[in-house]
Length: 316
Ligand SMILES: [Zn+2]
Image 1 (cartoon, protein in one colour):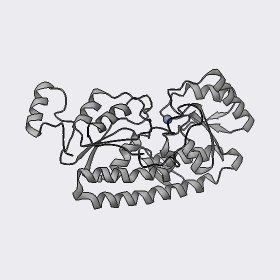
Image 2: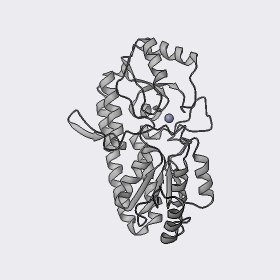
Image 3: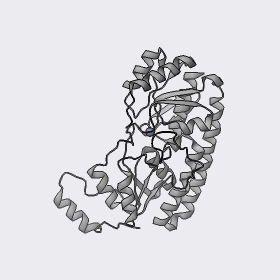
Image 4: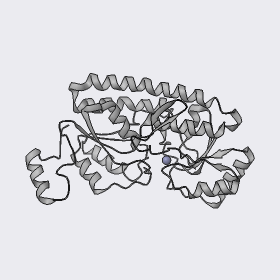
C-alpha cells in the first residue's frame, strides 16, 4: 500500500521544506523503492536481505540498543507515518513499542510481526514471570528464525507484486544459509565437553540457543532486561557457577555490564572479553577474521558466528 499518509512528492517537499530548514526534506532517499521501517537490528537485516535493492529500510534500533526498554523517537514516528510497511519482531520483545504498532495494524496499516507464523509448540513458554508471554528471543536458533522469512516475503510482495519471484528466491536462498549456519554451529559446539555446555549471561536471552544446541543457560536478569536482579539472584548464580566449576561467563552488548561483572568477581570466574550479541547485532561493516573465515558482525549470520565462536573458544 503506497504512501497512505504521504501528501505526494512536490506538495510534501514544499511543506517539509518550509517548516524545517535544518532537517532533510524527506526521510526516504528513494520513494520508488518499498519504504520499510524495521524495529530491531535482526529484523532490519532480515528485510534488507530479502528485499535487496527493491527496499529502503530505516532501522529504528541501532547496534547495541536494548529493544526491551527502547522508546520510539519523533523521527521513528515520522518514518512510520510515511512508510509503506513496518516489520517488527513481536512476542513483546519491543515492550514499549508493540502496542502502538498493533494500533497501526488495527487501523489497516501494513504492519507485521515477523514471528507471527511460529506455533505455540515451537515457542518456549517461560516457567515463572510473564506467564502469558512466550520467550521472544527466537533468533537464538537459526532454524526457528528462518520461519520469519515467509512473513517478510509475503509483506514485501503485497507492496510490489511485480517482484514476487525475486523476493521468494532470495527468501529460499537465505533459508538454506540459515540451515547451514545451524549445522556449522552444531559442529563447533561439539568441541565443548558436555559438562561445560553452560552459558551464564546478563539476562535470559539464550533459551532458544540452549534448546538448539543442547546447552544449559542461566541469566542474571529474567526474560526482559527490565527485570531487576535482587541479592538472592546474584547469590544463587554465584553458587551455581562455583558448583559447576565453569571456566567463563559472558556479558551482552545491549545490557549494562555491572551486574555480570560483580557476579564474575564474587564467583572467581573469568568474564569473557568479547560480549555476546543477545538482543542487538554489531555495527554493519564490523568484519572479523577468525578460524580461517571472515564475517560481518553487523549481520544476523555474522552475529551468530561471533556468539558461537566466543562461547566455544571460552568454554572448550
Ligand atoms: Zn532480551
